[in-house]
Every structure is written in structure tokens, then in C-alpha cells.
Length: 221
Ligand SMILES: *Cc1c(COP(=O)(O)O)cnc(C)c1O
Image (tube, rainbow, N blue to C red; front, side, top):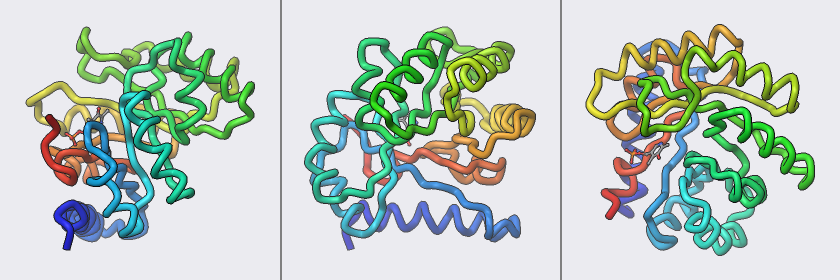
């Protein structure tokens, strides 16, 4: 079996085992395969195996790779997980089905405007800078409510959940707990936490989406 497909199956079955262990077999966890920095030939076997949910963090790269692949596999769900630059929002809305990284009022406003202009259906998550790191984007936990209200009430964005990227090398649990609490407080369906090093921990803390790159596709150059 293709190496990438076999990695995918291992990750998938670890997620299933954790759900089973918690007697939560009915809970759905979406495995978003993060394919940034990996070429079409490495991604294709997963598509041929039936997987359809992928994440990318760079617009140009995603456009290049997925214009070819989307023609062949027309039911792919592409998640944008990168930084939101104003001048790129138009094209991000054009090619992505889910935007996981709404980070501030201006982004929410521009995304809403483009969704409306292009008549697209795009579901959005708000990225929370849960580790309060100055170099990371995302809204601070205390400013979340304001951004959420503005996005949903003022701009009529479909905010389906929250996403975070943890600081490097921390114990993930307390951060995941805080994320889940925010998600629960606002009654949102999606909790996008967990990457290659902590997806099982994320599932045990209620993740509905995990974003896994290296563990499936291998190290990035
Ligand atoms: C790169 C990236 C991932 C995947 O990271 P891995 O450690 O390769 O699993 C997940 N989420 C975001 C936002 C990323 O940029």
C-alpha cells in the first residue's frame, strides 16, 4: 500500500480507537489532511483512496495544486488554515470551502463581502490565539466575544466554530480545555484543535476537526 495512504489509515484508526475508548463512536471527527508543501503526486493517492478533506495555508500554492486536482476530484472540501491577508481574501473565498482562520474584524468584514459578491457558501471558524503569542494570528480569548458577535450579527458570516494553533512544546490539555469551553459557551458545532503531535489528545478533548500534516504526508522541506 502507498505509504501516505497507510499513514492516513493509522491516524484514522487511532482517532476511531480514542472515540471508542470514550464510548463516543457517534461523534464525528473530521480528519483534515494538511497538504501544504507537498506536491500533487504525494496527495493523489489519498484522493484515489477516497479522502476528500484537505487543508492548505498558502493561497498561491493551493491554487496551483488544486486547480489540477479539483478538475479530477470535484467533491473536495478545501480548508484554508493560513494567515488572512486582505489582498488575498477575494481569491481565498473563490477556492476554499471552509476558512478556519478568521482573526480580526477587518478580515470578517472582507470575507463576508466577498462571499456575498461571489455568491459562495463558505463556512468560517474563528482562530483564537490561545497561547497569546505575539507572532501568531488569531483573536485573544477576551476579544473573542466581540469578534464573534460582529461576524455573525453585523456581517452575517456563518461562524461554525473555533480553531487554534498551540505554542510549541506545551502540554496541550489545558489549552484544548480552554478552547472547548469557549466553543461550548457559544454553542458552536466545530472545535478545530490538534495537529500531528496531539491529535489523539485533541479527540479526547472534544475535537470535531483535527488538522494533520507531517504524520500523514511526511516532513516538509
Ligand atoms: C501546518 C499546519 C498544520 C499541520 O501541522 P502538522 O504538524 O504537520 O500536522 C495544522 N494546522 C495549521 C494551521 C498548520 O499551519
